[in-house]
Length: 257
Image (tube, rainbow, N blue to C red):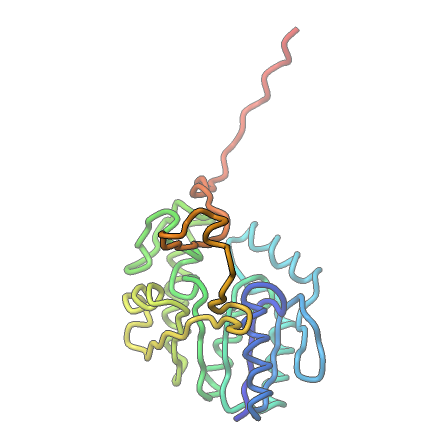
């Protein structure tokens, strides 16, 4: 089988996952090609589609207009041309957000191209009005409409973005949703994807590195001979972001004499 992957990055986080999938496909006799926006090693079957200046311009225009990921058209056309040339049997999408493509133009192309598409959900962006993790603000407007969102800048555009996502993702004829956790499946099942096939595939780990090992004396050293130890690891914990609304500032007070 010939697989074509698309992701925002070729390095770090989801880029590591996409690279591992790419390498495993090659090792098991499949043909694989991986296109990413920025950051990562390139070779005959791993291509970088964007540049830092286009990404920065897209990011800046997004801040001013509230329109996310629609300005990097040259990068989008590069991916589309490469897909047509490669002629894959299946297209595997990871993160489409991140200021590296015109995702709306790309979804239009996928609808017309009509090959099986797998969308891996690493976060919630694909079925919300723009937020990655709605649980930060405990907001469930995405189930109906994200009208006048108070949690993101240009929140008035969130409702339109959610409507466009419903229309565009809904137009892909053969789309399978792959959340990376059972929780993400449970929320995706209550979203615009509820009538799609949804299959959980957890992120893989290197079992040669992460496996049970006998470490002599470690329990006595840590004084936990009779205890069961559960180790939990997470990224940085942070408070919810403040509301991002533009405010007109008055004149600065005169300095004290």
